Length: 77
Image 1 (tube, rainbow, N blue to C red):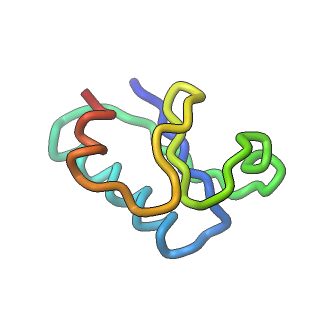
Image 2 (image 1 turned 90 degrees about the vertical axis):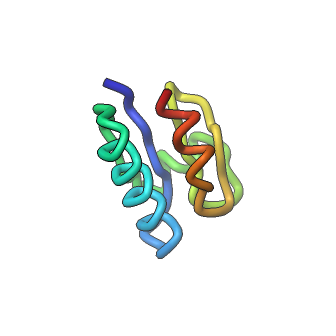
């Protein structure tokens, strides 16, 4: 099972990103564990400057906007 972290303090973009990743994973029948990390200390530890960053296997694969469906699908495969 792939672990995906979405970092953010609760903004609408962060929430929509979590929902989008979960929805696409379900449609593709892929098991993922999506974590919404809201702790500012943890977020700062990743050195991100714009939210929502998406972290997969401890690598920042996206930040600053809600990702496009094609990007999410590529991360899940």
